[in-house]
Image 1 (tube, each protein chain N blue to C red):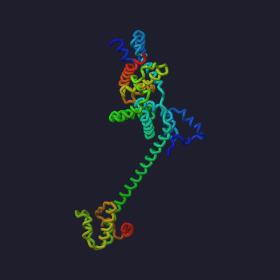
Image 2: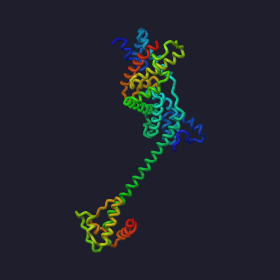
Image 3: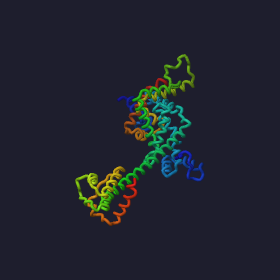
Length: 188
Length: 212
């Protein structure tokens, strides 16, 4: 590698004062002795000076107003996203609550109101809705209506196993559920 | 609405509060903003808007798009300031965002030649015309020569390949260190040095005939 090639290869570091002392001195000496590399240095320096002196662009007058508006929109969207997230959580909670309630109501209504209805087997292979449709008693009709209403509302209705053993006929929970099924849900 | 430019500061005297914000360095402003002083963001905008505009303009060559990209830069800063690592330099971070947006702009433009044509057409004013279109019978005076030289230097920088142009501008115009340029461009230190050397070499080749 000639001196000039070495100079050009290390020129950037030389110009940015990033060379070790000895190499820097070497470059300075070469610069003094070589007109071609001295010209190269002059061209880069002068060109860079001119580049730095180029007129600076100014922002348009409405720049701040536009930015302000975009920040406002940004805040608005963030607030909407927060609200949407809260609503989704609330809906999910309500859905889970409704599903749990549905799981409890249907077998209770059957047990409470239908004296002649057969006791449910713990795990039947026959679908619950089909078995309800086969019964004649008033209790199962009521239970059927409740089930239909719940299904229409989008609630998945499943039968509780051993409901007839868990809930007593005269217990307070049974009475409450019976009163509710006669009121709000059935009235819809 | 969050009025980051005009909201009253916490201090009793608005003028002294504004002046106090101006005294803060960038990291102080970031900390103040995150501490609830919303005007600090406005001060950051004041501090960087013109610098970024010129940086993005020199990189993309399109004034209007440059302004849009600077807006986008500030929006991204606003959106993510709470996640900014305060042990790092804010200026490097904001230049990185602006540089990436400029790079994407150039990439999109190269995929869409119509945009490039529109940009050329828009910037086609007297100062941007190539040398051979000048009136050869006119003997330019000093003022004209200076204007012409500036225009040619600007065009020369525009002609550099994008990755050379970016490091050249960051070093020569913005005065960034090699390390900062490496952070901003995402290249390693060796690559930055070699790109800068090649950029200066290209620049010298193109500009030499005009400066002799």
